[in-house]
Image (cartoon, rainbow, N blue to C red; front, side, top):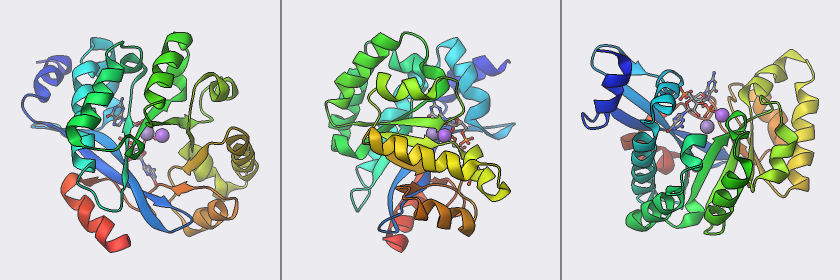
Length: 250
Ligand code: G
Ligand code: G
Ligand code: MN
Ligand code: NA
């Protein structure tokens, strides 16, 4: 059977999981939240990365069901976390242009009993080019309830700067390619400093992704990055492991 057919039944077969990667608050050095990352536990192929199946899900429309499930599941899990830790959920542009999306978010929060300030939606820059006005109004509606929006993979798309004022983002996530280049001395430091200034001008917070070394961490702390994400802090873990991480760090 082809992968699309298999993906269609993967949810019902309980093969889809959310794993959670810790987000370290740089000021307090506590775990402030987790990013929910989808995984497909395939009976033959093993763990399949979302980089492989999300594009198929988007093209086939399966993303609507997958995305709705992830929203409800992430809110339900996060409601049980201590320290008011927040959850960041990745959202496809396909979902964001759906008129039902706002009620999906509001209902997922209500059913879970999760305060809206503990939910953040991550949207990649490259996905945001089409239907900008419709997407902007949906984002404003949801943002008005207290839910945050993070601009994911910042710096990799081609219209980064216009995104910052066209859409109501509350956070910039510096793409991990820049963090990786911090050790190579190729101007990545200046780029991160410039992003900090941009974020300040727009009253947004900054998360650095893909932090793997102490040297990267030291620089990012020095320039005032708010949140650190990457293998140095922790790899994505299963939902069961989250409470222990919170208990250990916080
Ligand atoms: O976890 P990993 O690095 O394999 O993720 C690869 C990509 O898949 C990342 O860009 C991530 O943003 C995306 N992704 C992970 N989970 C989800 C999800 O639940 N929905 C969407 N739309 N994308 C996701
Ligand atoms: O596109 P998005 O930023 O959502 O992708 C997140 C992906 O990045 C996850 O699949 C996660 O596994 C991966 N990731 C997270 N931290 C690190 C890191 O420190 N190094 C590398 N190479 N990948 C990371
Ligand atoms: Mn992301
Ligand atoms: Na990202």
